[in-house]
Length: 192
Image 1: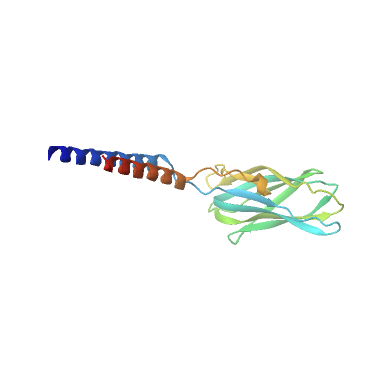
Image 2: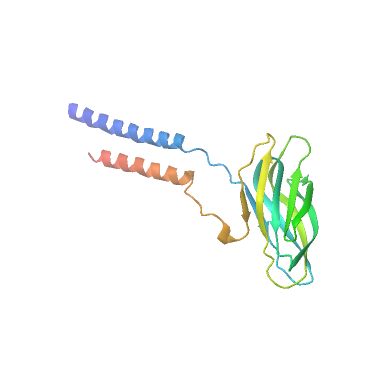
């Protein structure tokens, strides 16, 4: 009787330890926030046509202001228009100027302090394709600010699949690993 009670106590203790490890792992891994991403979608270039590159934003929260530079090959492309974007139906009022013959800077500051959250387009930049060749469109020097005048951590300039950063194991992988350890512990100690 005493031996059975001691065995049950060991099993219960090990299950408790595995459960505690699960809780510690759960508490140690912060909730994964959605990554704020700005993508530059470049059009196919056809000499003699007007094309639009779009600057899209995904998963932003409380956006209030921002800026970015857009570089391009000025022997192939000529800027003809910069159009305001919209995020969740709210217009993004843009101002822009040329930094040099190959770069323009776009800035915006939203009215009031309510901010915008969601996904949409920051801007549409129209180009006249004046010659054949590569457009060399590149977004850089990006900066977004929230309603508290803090910088928003953002993944800038993803234009192709090769630019997408590799994914890291998320919260689901941690839960699966801890669950596997807990099952292993229970199976191992149930056989004793």
